[in-house]
Length: 205
Image 1 (cartoon, one colour):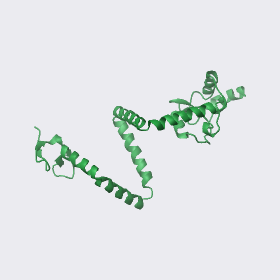
Image 2: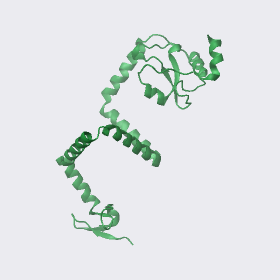
Image 3: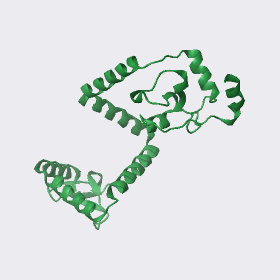
Image 4: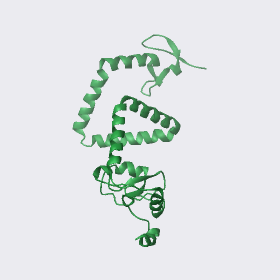
Protein backbone atom coordinates (compact mmCIF):
# COMPACT_ATOMS: atom_id res chain seq x y z
CA UNK A 1 0.00 0.00 0.00
CA UNK A 2 1.35 3.39 -1.00
CA UNK A 3 1.47 6.03 1.72
CA UNK A 4 0.42 9.65 1.25
CA UNK A 5 1.59 13.03 2.49
CA UNK A 6 0.37 16.65 2.33
CA UNK A 7 2.61 19.22 0.64
CA UNK A 8 3.30 22.34 2.74
CA UNK A 9 3.21 24.72 -0.24
CA UNK A 10 0.48 23.53 -2.62
CA UNK A 11 -1.54 21.83 0.22
CA UNK A 12 -2.26 18.81 -1.99
CA UNK A 13 -2.15 15.22 -0.74
CA UNK A 14 0.27 13.24 -2.86
CA UNK A 15 2.03 9.86 -2.84
CA UNK A 16 5.38 9.43 -1.08
CA UNK A 17 7.10 8.79 -4.43
CA UNK A 18 6.42 12.46 -5.35
CA UNK A 19 8.55 13.73 -2.41
CA UNK A 20 12.34 13.97 -2.21
CA UNK A 21 14.15 12.10 0.56
CA UNK A 22 15.53 14.03 3.55
CA UNK A 23 17.17 12.15 6.44
CA UNK A 24 16.94 15.14 8.80
CA UNK A 25 13.10 15.01 8.78
CA UNK A 26 11.24 12.61 11.14
CA UNK A 27 9.50 10.76 8.29
CA UNK A 28 12.61 10.89 6.06
CA UNK A 29 10.94 13.05 3.38
CA UNK A 30 10.88 16.70 2.34
CA UNK A 31 7.92 18.84 3.44
CA UNK A 32 7.36 20.07 -0.12
CA UNK A 33 6.58 17.88 -3.14
CA UNK A 34 8.97 17.59 -6.09
CA UNK A 35 7.03 20.08 -8.27
CA UNK A 36 7.04 22.78 -5.57
CA UNK A 37 10.75 22.31 -4.81
CA UNK A 38 11.56 22.69 -8.52
CA UNK A 39 9.49 25.89 -8.69
CA UNK A 40 11.30 27.33 -5.69
CA UNK A 41 14.70 26.40 -7.17
CA UNK A 42 13.94 28.17 -10.45
CA UNK A 43 12.75 31.29 -8.56
CA UNK A 44 15.96 31.33 -6.49
CA UNK A 45 18.13 30.89 -9.58
CA UNK A 46 16.37 33.74 -11.40
CA UNK A 47 16.63 36.11 -8.44
CA UNK A 48 20.35 35.30 -8.09
CA UNK A 49 20.18 34.53 -4.35
CA UNK A 50 21.75 31.10 -4.79
CA UNK A 51 24.58 32.45 -6.94
CA UNK A 52 25.38 35.15 -4.35
CA UNK A 53 25.37 32.57 -1.57
CA UNK A 54 27.81 30.28 -3.42
CA UNK A 55 30.13 33.18 -4.31
CA UNK A 56 30.35 34.21 -0.64
CA UNK A 57 30.77 30.58 0.44
CA UNK A 58 33.64 29.90 -1.97
CA UNK A 59 35.35 33.19 -1.10
CA UNK A 60 35.38 32.18 2.56
CA UNK A 61 36.65 28.69 1.71
CA UNK A 62 39.50 30.09 -0.42
CA UNK A 63 40.53 32.47 2.35
CA UNK A 64 40.55 29.77 5.05
CA UNK A 65 41.99 26.90 2.98
CA UNK A 66 45.04 27.48 0.73
CA UNK A 67 44.75 24.12 -1.07
CA UNK A 68 41.02 24.51 -1.76
CA UNK A 69 41.29 24.41 -5.59
CA UNK A 70 43.47 21.29 -5.55
CA UNK A 71 41.06 19.51 -3.19
CA UNK A 72 38.08 20.46 -5.37
CA UNK A 73 39.81 19.07 -8.50
CA UNK A 74 40.58 15.77 -6.74
CA UNK A 75 37.02 15.56 -5.40
CA UNK A 76 35.53 16.20 -8.86
CA UNK A 77 37.79 13.55 -10.47
CA UNK A 78 36.82 10.97 -7.87
CA UNK A 79 33.12 11.80 -8.30
CA UNK A 80 33.19 11.41 -12.10
CA UNK A 81 35.20 8.20 -11.85
CA UNK A 82 32.63 6.74 -9.46
CA UNK A 83 29.74 7.82 -11.70
CA UNK A 84 31.40 6.38 -14.82
CA UNK A 85 31.87 3.01 -13.07
CA UNK A 86 28.29 2.96 -11.77
CA UNK A 87 26.62 3.79 -15.12
CA UNK A 88 29.20 3.57 -17.96
CA UNK A 89 26.63 3.70 -20.79
CA UNK A 90 24.79 6.77 -19.42
CA UNK A 91 28.14 8.47 -18.69
CA UNK A 92 29.34 7.92 -22.30
CA UNK A 93 26.07 9.26 -23.74
CA UNK A 94 26.19 12.37 -21.54
CA UNK A 95 29.81 12.96 -22.49
CA UNK A 96 28.98 12.76 -26.22
CA UNK A 97 26.05 15.17 -25.80
CA UNK A 98 28.21 17.64 -23.86
CA UNK A 99 30.89 17.53 -26.56
CA UNK A 100 28.30 18.17 -29.29
CA UNK A 101 26.86 21.07 -27.28
CA UNK A 102 30.34 22.54 -26.76
CA UNK A 103 31.12 22.26 -30.47
CA UNK A 104 27.85 23.96 -31.45
CA UNK A 105 28.45 26.82 -29.00
CA UNK A 106 32.12 27.39 -29.95
CA UNK A 107 32.06 26.18 -33.56
CA UNK A 108 34.17 29.07 -34.91
CA UNK A 109 36.82 28.47 -32.26
CA UNK A 110 37.14 24.76 -33.19
CA UNK A 111 37.29 25.53 -36.94
CA UNK A 112 40.04 28.13 -36.34
CA UNK A 113 41.99 25.62 -34.25
CA UNK A 114 41.75 22.97 -37.00
CA UNK A 115 42.77 25.51 -39.65
CA UNK A 116 45.86 26.57 -37.64
CA UNK A 117 46.86 22.92 -37.21
CA UNK A 118 46.49 22.27 -40.97
CA UNK A 119 48.60 25.34 -41.73
CA UNK A 120 51.24 24.12 -39.26
CA UNK A 121 51.33 20.69 -40.97
CA UNK A 122 51.78 22.23 -44.42
CA UNK A 123 54.68 24.47 -43.36
CA UNK A 124 56.66 21.74 -41.55
CA UNK A 125 59.65 20.00 -43.14
CA UNK A 126 60.02 16.29 -43.87
CA UNK A 127 57.70 13.44 -44.79
CA UNK A 128 57.19 9.74 -44.05
CA UNK A 129 55.61 6.77 -45.75
CA UNK A 130 53.75 3.73 -44.42
CA UNK A 131 56.77 1.38 -44.47
CA UNK A 132 58.89 3.79 -42.43
CA UNK A 133 56.09 4.19 -39.91
CA UNK A 134 55.57 0.43 -39.61
CA UNK A 135 59.33 -0.07 -39.08
CA UNK A 136 59.34 2.55 -36.33
CA UNK A 137 56.30 0.99 -34.64
CA UNK A 138 57.84 -2.52 -34.78
CA UNK A 139 61.07 -1.11 -33.25
CA UNK A 140 59.06 -0.20 -30.15
CA UNK A 141 57.11 -3.47 -30.28
CA UNK A 142 53.87 -1.63 -31.23
CA UNK A 143 53.83 -0.12 -27.74
CA UNK A 144 53.93 3.40 -26.31
CA UNK A 145 57.45 4.85 -26.36
CA UNK A 146 56.88 6.57 -23.01
CA UNK A 147 54.89 4.20 -20.76
CA UNK A 148 54.97 0.89 -22.70
CA UNK A 149 51.18 0.57 -23.00
CA UNK A 150 49.64 -1.20 -26.01
CA UNK A 151 46.22 0.52 -25.84
CA UNK A 152 45.06 3.18 -28.35
CA UNK A 153 48.42 3.77 -30.07
CA UNK A 154 48.83 7.05 -31.97
CA UNK A 155 51.71 8.86 -33.75
CA UNK A 156 53.60 11.42 -31.68
CA UNK A 157 56.17 14.05 -32.65
CA UNK A 158 59.00 13.94 -30.07
CA UNK A 159 59.81 17.60 -30.81
CA UNK A 160 56.37 19.23 -31.24
CA UNK A 161 55.45 20.85 -34.57
CA UNK A 162 54.94 24.29 -33.03
CA UNK A 163 58.50 24.06 -31.59
CA UNK A 164 60.19 23.55 -35.00
CA UNK A 165 59.53 19.80 -35.08
CA UNK A 166 59.62 17.87 -38.36
CA UNK A 167 57.76 15.03 -40.09
CA UNK A 168 60.95 12.98 -40.54
CA UNK A 169 60.75 9.38 -39.15
CA UNK A 170 63.48 10.22 -36.59
CA UNK A 171 61.02 12.62 -34.90
CA UNK A 172 58.10 10.14 -34.86
CA UNK A 173 57.35 7.57 -32.16
CA UNK A 174 54.35 5.39 -31.24
CA UNK A 175 52.48 6.85 -28.29
CA UNK A 176 49.31 5.91 -26.40
CA UNK A 177 46.42 8.38 -26.37
CA UNK A 178 46.85 9.05 -22.63
CA UNK A 179 50.54 10.03 -22.93
CA UNK A 180 49.90 12.01 -26.13
CA UNK A 181 47.23 14.17 -24.50
CA UNK A 182 49.39 14.61 -21.37
CA UNK A 183 52.48 15.60 -23.40
CA UNK A 184 50.66 18.10 -25.65
CA UNK A 185 53.28 20.49 -27.10
CA UNK A 186 55.85 20.09 -24.31
CA UNK A 187 59.52 19.24 -24.77
CA UNK A 188 61.59 17.00 -22.50
CA UNK A 189 59.63 13.76 -22.99
CA UNK A 190 62.31 11.12 -23.76
CA UNK A 191 61.15 7.93 -25.56
CA UNK A 192 62.46 4.68 -24.03
CA UNK A 193 63.31 1.79 -26.35
CA UNK A 194 62.41 -1.73 -25.13
CA UNK A 195 65.35 -3.99 -24.10
CA UNK A 196 64.36 -6.68 -26.61
CA UNK A 197 64.95 -4.34 -29.56
CA UNK A 198 68.50 -3.16 -28.66
CA UNK A 199 70.08 -5.59 -31.17
CA UNK A 200 67.80 -4.35 -33.95
CA UNK A 201 68.82 -0.73 -33.23
CA UNK A 202 72.51 -1.54 -33.78
CA UNK A 203 71.56 -3.42 -36.97
CA UNK A 204 69.70 -0.34 -38.28
CA UNK A 205 72.60 2.00 -37.38
